[in-house]
Image (cartoon, rainbow, N blue to C red; front, top):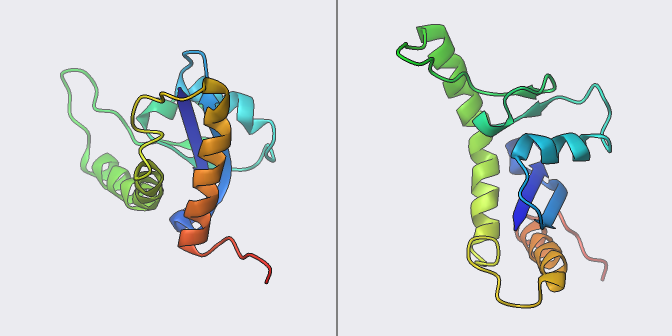
Length: 132
């Protein structure tokens, strides 16, 4: 099943999650469907799978039989240092092993379980404050 997580810069909070998308779909097409819920001027950072969308800043790929210039490599490093927080947050979600392994329960429960895991992760990173 396909998951997509949209987080704030520096991994401060989970903004949006698509959990358990059943059909095979590319990352960029899944993003285009969800982008309608955001302001059209909103800018995003993404990985190489999101290349081709004007609102997503992605790293440059090395051309076939070519090399990247030093400035392109520096920009890629800058972007990677911004994206590392997102990757750490995804790692915390995958610790629960629901998103990283084969799901053996009822497939209709997958989204509910993933949302619960994201709630626990938000509690862990301190963005979810429960009333007393």
